[in-house]
Length: 145
Image: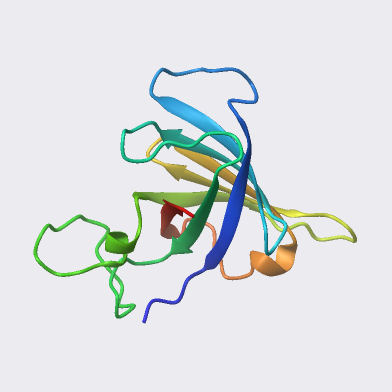
C-alpha cells in the first residue's frame, strides 16, 4: 500500500489573490481542515477539474502512483494496470525545490514544489513536513469532496 507523505482536505479561500496572470491557470489559496496548513497552488483549468471559492478538495502528496508503494520511474506508462491516479480527478508530478524548516518557536515550515512550472507553496506546522527532502520527486493528487 502506498504511504502518503501528506493528506488533508482543503477549502478554497480565494482564487488568483494577486490577480489573474494566465488564461488557463488559476492560483488557489486554500486552508486545510485537519492540519491547519496554508497552500498556494497553481492549477490548470480543465472541464474535468474546476475550483471556485468555498469548494473543498482532498489533496494527497505521494512518492509513487503504484498501489503497492513500489517506486516508479517518473515516466507515464499507459496500460491496463490500476494506479493511485485512478482514485483522483487531477494529478501532477513535480520536484520539491525548497524547504524552510521553520526552526524556532512559533515559526512555520514552508515547502515549495514545481510541477513543470505550476507551483505549490505549502506552509504550516513543521511536524507535518518531516517526511520531505529537498529535490524529492512527488505526485500531487486531488479530487473534489
